[in-house]
Length: 453
Ligand code: UGA
Image (cartoon, rainbow, N blue to C red; front, side, top):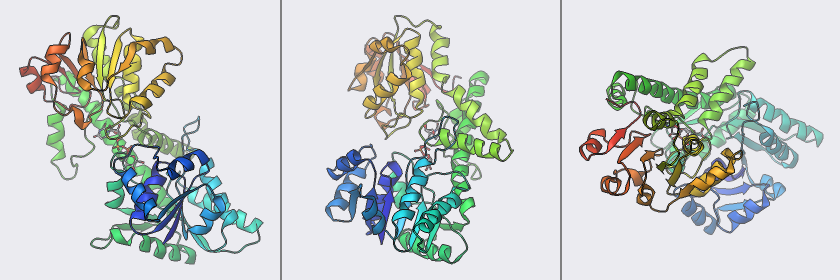
């Protein structure tokens, strides 16, 4: 099939590369000519395991093309994916400018029937607005061309996006029940056929339900995390261990094990933005989503949990103290620093007078940029922040090690190095990655999240 992807951001790139890998011919369109030029030279602007190889192979085999030529790109695909960014505007609503611009471009340039697939996460009702924009453009040109707008939300996780795309647990298709909708459904089923050979994974529904399902999924996952974080703080007071509680409840298949890890709060570009957008959607309908409002409030508190634990141990004045920080990205296997809890921690330590020596396997550059933004009011504090290429080097003369992101590089605690290099072997484990008993036996003081019994 010939496919056009509008937008070469995270979702667009992964979708384009994976659809090409499945044998389709894919045009990835972006208006940013510098970005397109970079992609044409084989430079991928994001860090995602496996993506570089996938793009290289499919470009080489002629199935994947990057272009900033709007007309040619729109002429190319029978299916047009809209995968542009929907960042929050200053009120926290999803900013749909790029979505509507893409829809307008499709309507303006299409000369034959198209299936328009909404991949970006958009508020409920956007499908109808996209459809209206396309109709407006066609009417302006006096054209009658059949099209349908399909909602096909993506459920990729950064760091394992390719695997998620290639092994989806479900494919949601929201389509209208009219003739163009039914025809579009046939084409989408054809496109996703390779995933449905042994087991039907497609869930067909109306467009509004598909749009809401996307938000509901992220909101449910964020709820589980905030629930566990709040219980972890209670476990700390009660002398219980949240890790054991997690195992105890996860064994119930109605609950399950995943997304029950207490930590330093959820970050990234999706959960914070989508939970906020869903709350605002409800408000616009005159309803308050009280559970989700609490989920957000708990997450704000949780982002400070490590800093609070550090202050509880050392007091509020950290002048003369030095901290090693392991992991800066909002989660492992990504260089994404958006809403990363490490930003709150590092900025807080610096503001309290401490020095910080940080390590992250891939996000150091992004982190430097993000922290320069966060500390724009006090840029001199950045002089006390440095980065090291080897994790052990961060431990030298450190008063404590704070683990923020559970990269696999940190899975085994560097016990010998801690004892040899640190001023005092003390760890704040923001992800409960290490075994408190193992550390205690080795003579390292351990502070986890919800496990200080
Ligand atoms: C999330 C969803 O998991 C994807 O299904 C969805 O497609 C994506 O958003 C999106 O809407 O685009 P992502 O933001 O990449 O994916 O990352 P997650 O792995 O979900 O992690 C989100 C945050 O929750 C991270 O900060 C992570 O550390 C935190 N988390 C996750 C916990 O604190 N505890 C857990 O048990 C799990």
